Length: 112
Length: 115
Figure: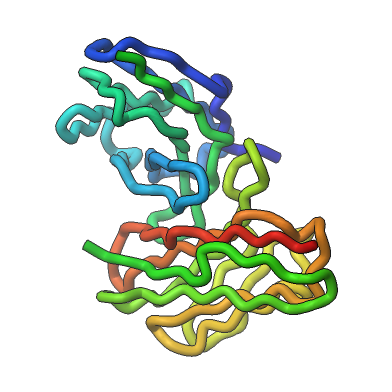
């Protein structure tokens, strides 16, 4: 049973524009959310996280928004760069330090 | 930052043999290690959680006698795939949580191919 869902398997964005990656979750016990970037045959690289007490967290070009009532979070990348092209995974845990539940990922392609 | 070293990065083995995958936390003590498996175009699926010095907790559907996990020290955890079969071919990734920390650090993954 997939508790974290990324319904868009792929996204293509022009360089300089905003990339918006979406994620939905079903478990109301989740209180810690993370985004990871992953290249083929490599481990995920941490990008940004947010706890349920916040609704926004920003780090440079990356901003994560959390809407608890909708059980939805999104990752905004602005401006998008070709080097951002990768698969992005949304992950959640019920408590910080517990195992992460991952979505299936969204493949982002940023074109020049 | 925290680094987890995972070896080997890729391995090809014959059906019926065993393969050991190692994950080492290089600059921190990992009280908890998580082992994931990823099939092509799928999400990372948790296989088991191990805490240093105690038995691993396996997720439903994961055979504990087939996937042996040892977490004997705060810096090393191993996953041994015993009597490997072609259906075990997958990408295996470990993730470590630092003692008292909040982050999760991933290894670089191991591509296992069983022929």
